[in-house]
Image 1 (cartoon, rainbow, N blue to C red):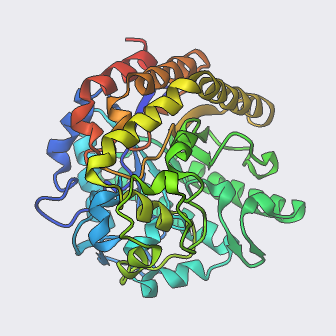
Image 2 (cartoon, rainbow, N blue to C red):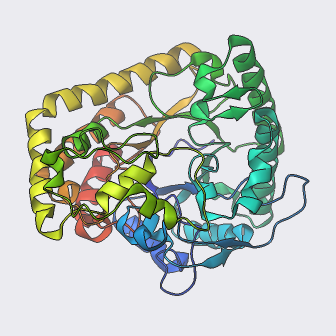
Image 3 (cartoon, rainbow, N blue to C red):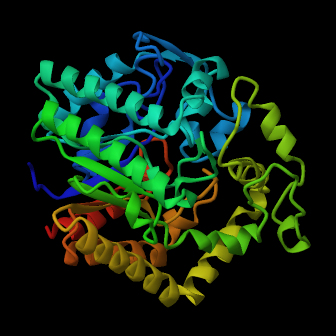
Length: 424
């Protein structure tokens, strides 16, 4: 198995495009742009779970739509799809991997189905998958992943796989039978049942595709260790050590519910106060939301910023980072140290990867991160720290694809950060 260090771009919706003009329409020309920024790996949604229906019948093409309608253009990563279209996951995967092969770029395949991906599709498409039990979901997604890997092998492209995982943030997946808000809250007996089934599916993938690394992906460092499959090759954790910097702007107005938040006067001065949660929900006519409700108030808040107050909001965030830099840096290191400790104790042979992290900014207009030298200083510190801890791979930041403002504004900064991790 390859031990090449991975500098990862998190281009979650890279397979989603709606024709000419879409950010990800032409992978062949895009791939050079990744390399020019120091990336040698891309992590994204593979479509697994949607290649075949729950009865095993192939799905050739699916209709897709902008998640948040007219508001999608304002949200980071949400702007990857701005009009209705169709998607053929098999075709798009081959286009991606052929381009990756040409530029020696590796791909991480994952699924955000239960958190975000379902937003792009009609409920008639996704409801049957949601109705599967957790055990049935694990088997269904593993079978689709198995098919993808066979397809790549048939086209001499499997060497471009960095690693695969059944689900993004599997430790936080909700269950419907038994009803559990998150696997993190499962009983000990049920957690063991899920882990053993997960291990069985990983064994199947190892047997069918020797040489392909399989990862377990978790949402943070403080995880339930009894859920970790003992036969994984990679432990992929998420380290959003700086996300709370946005509390200086949000003041608790972004919560995991759909009730209209009470905006304090201190925040109203930055806003038009013209958009409501219901306005966002009304734009999701083709979509529906059954998890991660926080994205509704997040879109409501960040789409409503006054154009002439953006610089003030950026300065607010810069002040927060400057005044609390040391505590954010300590949090980053504490999270890394914790996951290293868990890896060493539970799966000592597994590689470590930081597959998401730092922050998520809800606005394409708010450029605090792009402009802040302090922001890039702490990012560079995490790149060096992960290198010193022997990580196989890391992202620079979660929003790091061609649809993000940073793609063109921070090309040199990406190159520097990635070079620090590779020690070039």
